[in-house]
Image 1 (cartoon, rainbow, N blue to C red):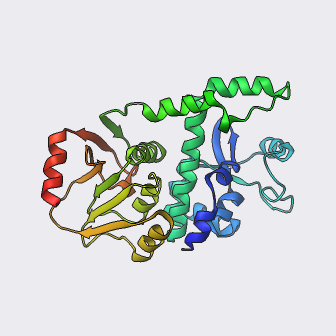
Image 2 (tube, helix red, strand yellow):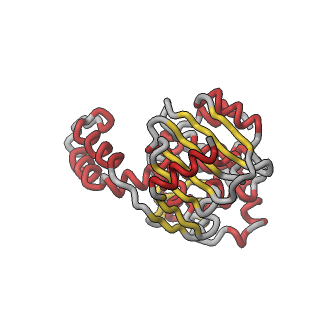
Length: 298
């Protein structure tokens, strides 16, 4: 996997390719293929060969009316919907993106899919939690008022209040809730100001992708088993991009824990790279558990 390519694709770039069709957020097949570094035909062939993994709420083909509407939209370039295509394009939801990473067998597709889902989450969360602001912006647009969201103090206050909000102590995710699970885990990771300690015997490269959301100065330590599929090249790529990370092997535990700033401990019902695949819970532990774990592994 070329980490430089993955890093160069910003969340804003991905968000620009997300459209709303049939009332849901989707990405067109050609845009997904470009991000996955494969051609569109191969991408859709993998989908059709594994059609049982792609129900209509994961992937659907545009009809003529939808296609014509998108062609008239300024949000879609001619490259995304070339008139030379012999068939109408397919649209993939965030669940479809995750399903694609399971049938396209390469690490790049897996890591890029997480980055794409993260963009879906960011957009959805922003729309839901700042709907009033967006509505006002839409109303002001007709007056041609230049309203710069990123530097607006009121907008910053909204974001700060979101970051300070208390997370629930117990959360349950069911099979298929990939984006909700990823979103919650990323929120836990972003809480850390000094350190993150992950105890996850079967973590893999996708865990690094989630941890890459950490704040810049946060020190990361991962305890894993010898069976964990954590690629050394991926670890080196992570260090170059996000700073030092300490990886330790141990067979002393089975359960998964995420410790934030040596103060808060979250019990994970599954490896974080498996979030959303099956039902699992996240529970916040008492401070005594944090002390016991830190004493045991230090």
